[in-house]
Image 1 (cartoon, rainbow, N blue to C red):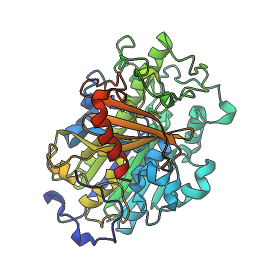
Image 2: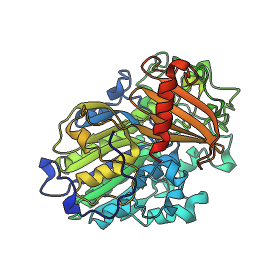
Image 3: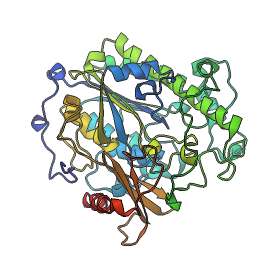
Image 4: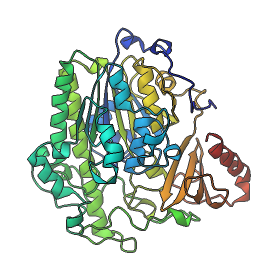
Length: 480
């Protein structure tokens, strides 16, 4: 296994970087990075044939689809911090701690310093305001040529956000987790207006004379699950994609995997850990989620169509990524913050000029790999501090026998931290007290995906797996 480069000894000249793909060797490519919130791999291109996601599916046919991509921590802020800095949560201690890591670089500042037109639109870092505003968010915003939290761009958007904002203290318990379908245009919701803003900024970037690096962050399918009626009408509520086969935790799963205050807490319906959605209520929520996914797919299609209209598609790297998956009742959970496959994994598609199209790979990759990859493809100097590696070898050969990288991720459950390593067959999880390297292991989980692809049983205490458990435990801590 190739060791990940944790601390490089200096900035390597752009001229020392690996060469660009042939089609973009003469000039630096543009980058359009599309981030989608809470999107599990419930897409047509990931094998969900009943999902209506034609635009994302087409993008997959124009690039490479990563079937086993893992986030650093399956919750919004830490996952995005890892993406934007190429540092895992174990190094930053989650949330906004990346600002304190010596030598850290952020993706917007790095591309801006390299001469790119840069823009951050929508939800890229996280929500404005709150306890992160002074320490992290202001710094992040200033590192972009354009930085727009699209929720507040106009009075109309502000009104939409106030209607949908599940975190508003004054409206706690008054909003439904999924409203009834409303026959309105896409622009009645924030993501519809965000797509319009992304088109405007693409046009501005095309006139700038610079290569561009634009990140567009769509909010849906994050709760509340609201979308125009026409997207609900795409699905039969009695035959919905993504209906879980397992509705209870794996046998022998750690007690720390239970997240009693799940994502549906505080909505009008009154769901709690002991009162989860069932029957018609669960079906309504899954129907709403599918509608939101198709709604976002349509917005992605609008942005990509503008890229085509501008004649820039052949000069632009397009990345589609989600910050984590979502359970939707699978394994008895309506949440995202677990170390299970459905939440720790998320969609990733890269379409880069000069590389073969319509490919898939089961090789394991991480979100922290994306920053180094884009620098490599754009001929920009490598990071001084990184937990990632470039994915260019997999763009060249998706089945490369030399790629044996595992993924590392974690969950912080009220101070009890579950660190995990995922290789081609197993996921091993150690629960310890806090982020520091405590000697006391509170609990252990081991899942064998060759025998139980849906995580049916924790085999950590099975003596037949002693050798694998020891191997993975050593691997988990070696990289740190």
